[in-house]
Amino acid sequence: MRREDNRVLRHCDYRWAEDLSGNEIDESEISRWDPGFTSALIGAVTPVVRRWFRAEVRGLESFPPTGGALLVSNHSGGVLTPDWNVLAPAFYGRFGYGRPLYTLAHYGVFFTPFRAALGRLGVIHANRGNAIKALRSGAVVLAFPGGDYDAFRPTLAQNVIDFGGRTGYVATAMQAGVPIVPAVSIGGQETQLFVTRGNRLAKRLGLKRIRIEILPVTIGLPFGMTVFFPANMPLPTKIVYQVLEPIDIAARFGTDADAETVDTHVRAVMQAALDRLGRQRRIPILG
Image (cartoon, rainbow, N blue to C red; front, side, top):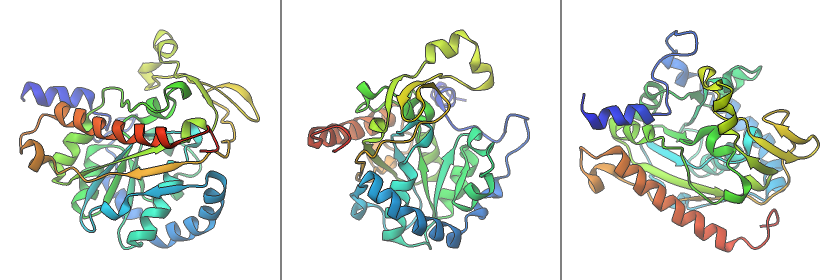
């Protein structure tokens, strides 16, 4: 294996094909997506989400009209992230429910009573096998490379694209032969005050052995200051999503592109877009 490939694997945020018990993940989970269930839930929840967050999604007209694509976004809002609830209704509103949108999720998300419902919504384990299988089927896959590291970034650094050095999404897109479609959101880190990720404390406590790398401190309502849990109620901040132009990796960087080089470009494009959204934002929460 080449040195570059080793570097990609070290930074890859997708688990390959194992859960905590060492068992292979069932990659047939992409077949659990239920368009009827997804449509019904979106129909029930979207009116509330739109009013609460005054949600706005821009740029979907530039999205590839057909075929697989890896939609790469920053992640915001902590435990009760509004990202999917803002982006998915707009996606299905434009492309319909004949085009699945799968979302890659950390294994911990599935240790909840909502595991079955998540599968029906197209939420799948974040391993490369699942992602590639979904992409090669012609579906769109939504990835948050920064994961909880990104979702708990401090409010004072809310307009910074930081994936924590993770570049596995690039290798996934290259192996599946699909474009990367960057997207950025603003407003999620205003749903409460995100004080610190607490990654140094988590490291000192040795929590990495159980795949916990942060102990975030947040302040909000109704619980005040919390460390990870319980989750405060999101404030009604205005959230804007901007979908950007697709990036054809092979056309721009060649068929043997370096993952870190591609990642640097993707983050630069996203940072420029987020900076523009930041300049347009007049007042926190109100937008």
